Length: 92
Image (tube, rainbow, N blue to C red; front, top):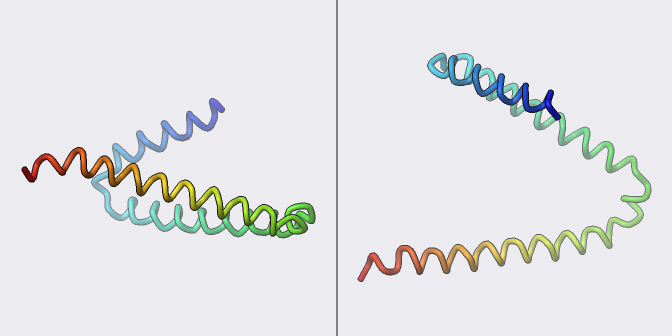
């Protein structure tokens, strides 16, 4: 865990000192996007190779759909109430 925090802090420091060099920032953006795509592919490969997950995919998919719908609905409702409470009074 400390190693992860070290690399995160080192990256933040490097980003701070190199923030005015747009070439490095653009390169870091492309490398980050490529790394995320590679990690997603490897995650899919791992999930696809796991027979337990594949065999229970319908059950897990239904649970994920319900959780996702609940999270989105809750976020929309809370956002609406915050919008009405914070911005609704400014219009009056």
